[in-house]
Length: 392
Ligand code: NI
Image 1 (tube, rainbow, N blue to C red):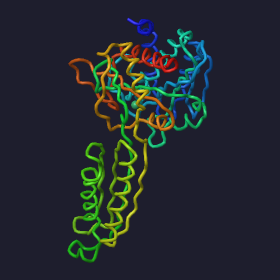
Image 2: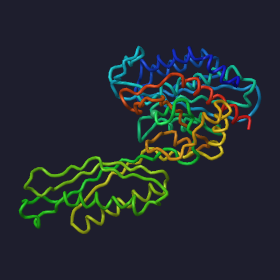
Image 3: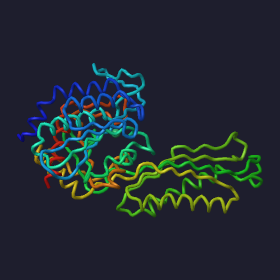
Image 4: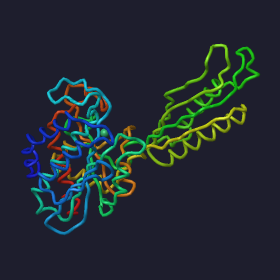
């Protein structure tokens, strides 16, 4: 067993205590006031060299300087919870009504604090500086907290950034690594088609927004099937189709609300452009008018090849070959870590939480929970990755 694994396991009582404290008092995006104070206090208690508070709101950055000269690397954890009433019956159940760490960010913060402890214990092995980035507002698409952390300037000098997410689709404790696209870009569109009402028996006197909306929805089905590269992935979903006021009146207005998920900017641009052109064509042909609000959320999260290789190697050195899963297919949820990877090199990985024989509750579910045995794994992985990156 590596020294790092041994030291990380020894931290477990403390990690469990920290994680339960975060879990009991979750705070939603941009309201992470108490969480932020706790993070800063823990960092000071652990003896990091510098604690920078109030970065982009409630963000906190801890700085650890190694014994030797070298570059700068960042490790990131997100801090916010969700507006969900927890249904788990556990002693550390959320005490904040209607708010829950249902995306596991309590584990991410704990894992990073554990990494801080391990790095402070191993300053001799650190060639350079490690920045521990506690980021608010990950769940607040399309704004997100990562852009503000980048804009703060505190990350200008980093060479790379690494982070992880607990992942119920992977077996417990396994590290899921993938080079290239790992998570999707999420966009939200709202289309309003303005037709003209008329008597239901005289459609020729109106402009039927129901028919035009239906035309739009059906024609949009070919964007992914006919225009996106078959080896690429994308989703266009219409979640809302609202039109009409009465069974015998030609609908004067139709509202379509939906989401687009893509894994690269080409597909993303193409789908937005196709939507606008299709809408123009339908209006031209029918005499209707329309508005489209196309809101771009987080971009696709695309891991850098050399950093994916590095963290994969580090994970194998800690947990063995069997501890690592090479992820084949990206997932369609989004993650604002993607903004860091557009400006800096780095890699985001998944840490499996599915236990043998149990069907895990998904992320964002009122019953989501993890076996805390993953905490030391996250800490060891982050700490060792930082050391290995700076030593390369
Ligand atoms: Ni999350």
